[in-house]
Image 1 (cartoon, rainbow, N blue to C red):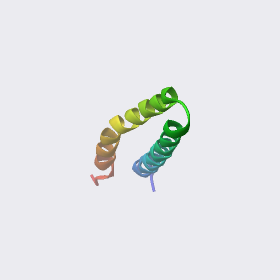
Image 2: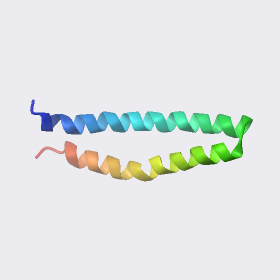
Image 3: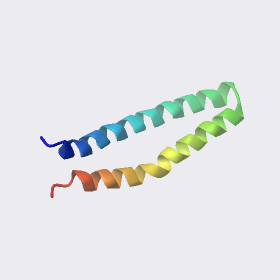
Image 4: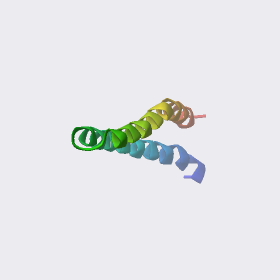
Length: 69
């Protein structure tokens, strides 16, 4: 298998990791909102917004890369 064939699979796995991190950050955000600082929770929500904003582009690019030539 050529290395170029591995690229879409690698990017797919990186995207899976990103989604798992997003879920983890959301859990932490909810905990921080309940028990700690609203400022910290706001910072966490900012990170989540960035992840969410980029998700559509990542998925679209992955779909293109994984489409057979």
